[in-house]
Image 1 (cartoon, one colour):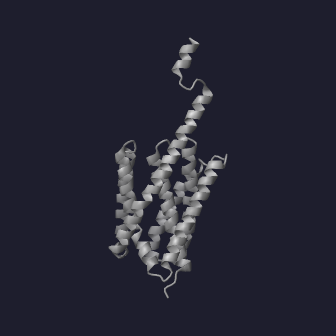
Image 2: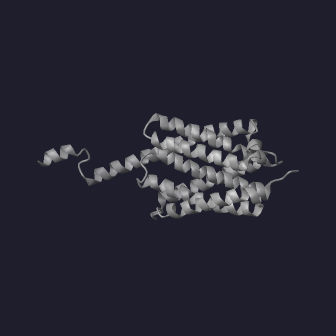
Image 3: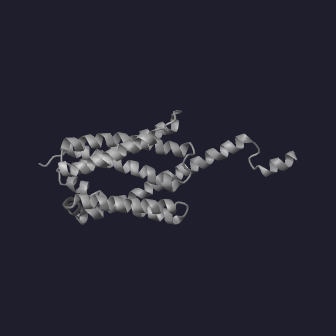
Length: 237
């Protein structure tokens, strides 16, 4: 009987099962990072197309409609990605989504590129985002602390940010925009920590879903960091 049980369990004991679980988590994490790197390509292409087509000026002309349209398209595509996360179609949809997100960058990129030091500000924002992501991913990998509680309050914070951003479309207050961006960077940096640790701990086993979550964290940190740099360090000379 013992031989039959051993043959039925390819790992032989609990230690083998734990090792297999770790291998699975590492595989999901590697696939997530690889797809995340690939997803940046259509984002850059989308941003370039958006700037060349001057989509920023179009969005600035109807900010409320643009925001509502963007949120509808983004939510729809994210739902489609989740429904197809177990197939190759999920990867294609994710890359299409990142292209659309690149298009949406055209408004802030167009404004920043209109500054004499615009290219430098974009590079600083990119470098700063990379440092933040690297730091959060490292903490998630080495820390023994459980960061699962971050998700609850971060969702509340994101709703507050959305409301504040809509209000600022009418108010046009640089100080409020600066405050929103600082808070948003804090929230989405924490979400990076939360989302990466979920993969490491086995809470997220699908690399497409994991990539989508971490991509959105990185995207929002970059946008708000660039906004802060544009407000505080932008030059029109």
